[in-house]
Length: 96
Image (cartoon, rainbow, N blue to C red; front, side, top):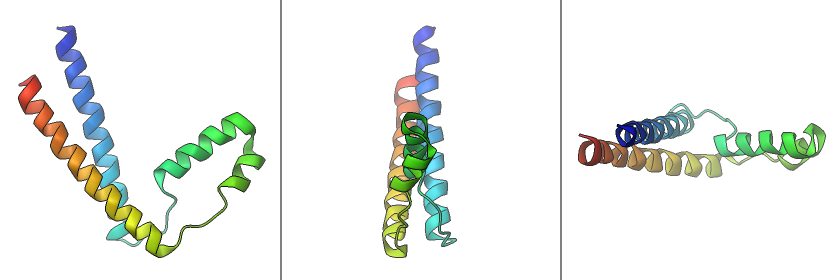
């Protein structure tokens, strides 16, 4: 019973991560939104906790060019789709 719960939890986490990646990629590619990528926001938050807000904000002030952001969005969208497909393969081969 514990193994089945762990398998569903692992599937749900993979599904959630893939969905977030696909949504972020679509926002960047299709809607052409200029936003800060999610890994940068996570690193900024960890830096704020570790060294303080003013020192951390100096490290993350640089803006990303539109071309680099578009290639990032394409990679995130592709990897999110791959994780989504692999999570469903995991669901149907291991759990069901």
